Amino acid sequence: MRRLPWMMLAGGLVLSAAPLRAQTYDPSYPVCLKIYPNAWGGGGEYNECTYTSMAQCQASASGRAAMCVINPYYAPQYRTPPDQYRRRHRHAY
Image (cartoon, rainbow, N blue to C red):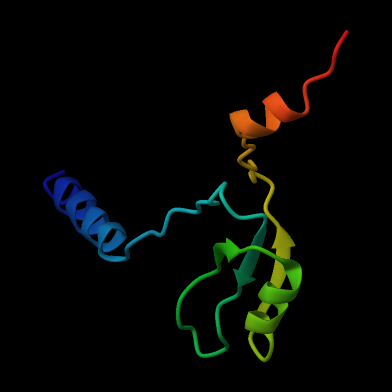
């Protein structure tokens, strides 16, 4: 029975030794590069959401184990037109 706490502690140390990378999608960019782990076991699968166009992402993905995907959490920032525009283009109703 004394072994159980030590085994639990050892298991916890093993699990905490490998850092986990949180999967996040940056809502500021519409395109993400999904990068797959290489054949030599380095790294894990993760997303890089820093691309403004599919062509830009595809150029970065070229020659890598990666593919471009549309960011499902993209939230475009809409801006209102400046006051000058509104005054100049006011409609008479």
